[in-house]
Image (tube, rainbow, N blue to C red):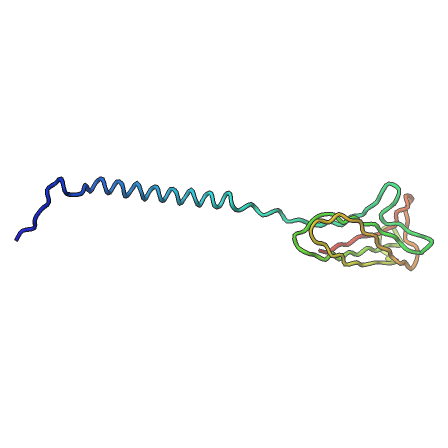
Length: 150
């Protein structure tokens, strides 16, 4: 027995179905690529740059940041704490007063642990009890050094 053969008008056109399938696959692939590009460029903002908190001398025109108070035998230190941080930190601040301008003979020191978080803009005042007067220059600035560890 022979297999019956359908007339040509009833057979599917292989070329047409093949072209439709390829066009559909290409369209789906393009949509996927466009979706990935949009997902990576618009939905994920770049992380902010790391932020830091700085501690510096807070002198004014009339008041040095590190000054000797003869009445109390202390050195009064004024510091500016400015910046921002995304995480809670402890700043270890040490200020040392010196008997000479070369900062080689320490006469007293103070250490402070300052917790910071978020945005910071404050003035910190510390007092150093000294064993003897520090070196004070003509402008009234006592010889001091500042060390900050984050």
